[in-house]
Length: 255
Image 1 (cartoon, rainbow, N blue to C red):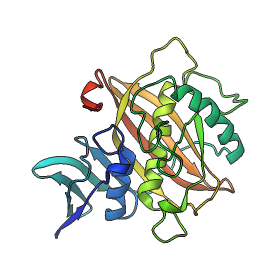
Image 2 (cartoon, rainbow, N blue to C red):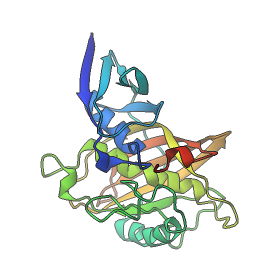
Image 3 (cartoon, one colour):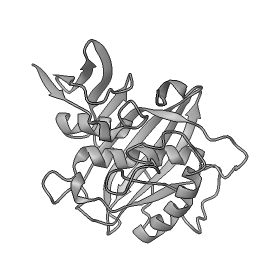
C-alpha cells in the first residue's frame, strides 16, 4: 500500500546556503519511515517547500514536484567498530576542530558545522583530533562534543531523530580531511548516502560525543563510519556515510 506524506525542511536546517543539511534531511525521512534505514540523496533538498514522501512497502521516495530528491530503504540494525570517546576528550578535540574549520570558507552557515551560526541556533559541531591519539595510520578518528539543547526536542526530554542524524553528518565529513597531511588540500564534499541505526535518543543536555573515521575512497565516493555515544559511553547510534567529493562548489554557494 502506498502512502503519501507531506513535510518540509525549514530554512534553519540548511547545509549549503540554499538546500537542506544532508544529515538532517536523511534523519527527517527516517523519522517518518521509522526504524533503521538507509537514505540516498539524489538532488539538493529544497528549503521551505512542501516535499512528498511516497511510502512503498519497506522504503519510499521523496519528491519535490516531479523531481526525485531522495530514496529510503529499511535496513537491519547497523553497528561499526568505532570506540567510545568521553565528553571531556571530545570537547578538547573540538577545539582543534574549530581551528581547522575556521580555515575554510565553505558552507559557513551550515546548521551542523557552520561557525557563523550562533549557539542554540546551529549545532556548532567541530570535530577534531582527540588529544593524545595513539592510533597509527593515515585514517585517524575525529570527535566532537555535543550537549543538545531543549529546542531540539519535541517532547522536552529526548532529542528528535532528525537532529541525531544531523549531529552525525558533518563530523563524519571532518574525518575525511583528518589524514595528518597539512599540505593536502581539504576535500569539499556533499552527503550522498547515510545508513544509520539509533539505539537510544540522547536526553536533553546529555553529555554526548560524536566519533567518526574515514574508511576508504573509491573515485569521488568517500566512505566513513560514525557513531554517537552517551554520557556513560553507551552507543546511542551507529552509521555509515557516503560522501561525494565536489569538483566545483560554486553551484551550491549563495547566489
